Image (cartoon, rainbow, N blue to C red):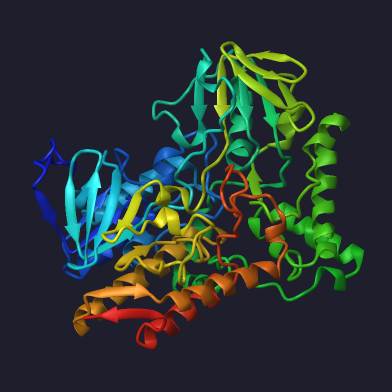
Length: 546
């Protein structure tokens, strides 16, 4: 091993290293999982494709990248010293600050020595006779352990759209999810951006301030709210940290895993128009993704949702000076909140700049990427740089990018061909001793991810402790229990407006991907109680073997 934890060289084919657990991924999930397993006295190896820790925040270095959960809550709660001593700079932390935090955690808890960086896992095979997983990497490593824990992240496999001629482009081609660590200078350049989801909405204002001219190729207009980001006041931080025990406890039982977003009790349709307008105005000024939780029926009743959507549409019309551009930027094909609602820093104002042109590719479709730029049906655009803000193969993509199988030949790819199937989002039937952190069928991306990560990691660590004390060598999701959980996840989703949108929540952004609503909409608080009950009943719904 080298000093920074990288595996040096390629071991002989018969050089198999044995551990108690293998963890794939060194983002926030993998780091905390390593810390917990090590505290149990287990020998752990973590594999990470990047050269450093941080996961999503390692790769997504594009200008303007920022979290949409307030920094004082988007942080670990497991260490009182850590949460008291770390100093966040802004209300919504920027990517460099979050990456510094991840590196601080890795150093503070001496985690790097068990992480193999620059190492991508290619396959994981479960030996059904020996009850262990064998993992192979692209560096030739062969590692074996009874338990394998996937901490690969929900938004970690960038999606590169398969435009005709994409590889012929002679200019600079970038993806927001694979941004160069050294940064990019757009000064004086003709830049095109494809995509106006969360990444696009964050990066577009930043590029516009530098570029000679920016062309935004919009496929789907999106709802976005002003973030109202600001530097944190020391007095506010002091009060917040003094109240951390109560705040963290509220977050653990809040639907979104965020204490600052309480459960609404009023219906949007039960209030007078003037009252409702004041509530929306206050929500707009506050700057929070909790806007869609201002009323209890915004995500379940189309008429209620329209009241919120119309408010934001009116705001767009008031900000963007060109009425035709404002109309093109106004979402009308999905309910507000059913695609990831965004927080921005001057996004709609950017279209008032003379050096920014919006191209609505629903009306004028992209036909090809050319050596010199991009061609739509009506015209050619000469570009020096093309930025793909086209998102990810979300939730399942990174998992299915690994060849996960059993010794009898069952593959995860085949099992999930018609959509992911899990029990509690933690395990999938037929693949024993394989855990997933924030997997499909768990609240995951609909929550503060660190709240969900800590809940999953703590549950898995407790489970492994219980199994060891009981002499259990094998745990597997029961197929009937899995079927009931999948049915429950679907029933809960179908009570909302979410499945009606062509979002990445259902895989609609990936051609050929099965359309299944993947996260669990029952809320983190309810989900946490369900997981605790399952464990308290002797891991009800799981099959245990000694």
